[in-house]
Image (cartoon, rainbow, N blue to C red; front, top):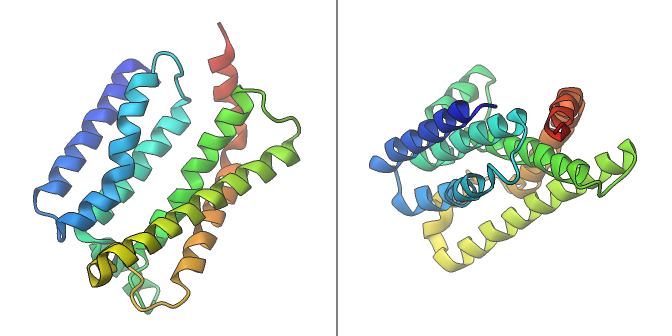
Length: 203
């Protein structure tokens, strides 16, 4: 990915942040949902020369950021596209949060795979797949613990952030969606990812 393309993705992300943060449904929820974006963006800016990522990973991070930003603007339970999905598939709830958790597995799987392969930390495809899935599930579990902490700290004010919509199995289904996302990334994108990693490794 060229420098101009990276700048374009950065500008689009900043624009999306500005638009979503102008009049979000709930300001605290917006901030809680976009914190990962606010943390990752400076890290990518600081590391883009010393540790450039593959184009595939940059694009995945950008798309994941958009999912988080949109969820922050409306809250996950009120995203209009989620209501469309609910209507089309005759679901009992707005499923947009499941898209977010799918990406929570999809993109970290690529990031973990890239770090493990570039650092030569693991050998063998089976062990690589096992470790990537373990890391993704650890990330997903950590996020659920953060949501639990927010619920305890904020009381009823955390309802918009949790977005459970009365589903007693929301935590488990969130982690399952992250697992599906990780497996999908590994099955669909590993060959492309390998080619891009090989190009990065060339002097």
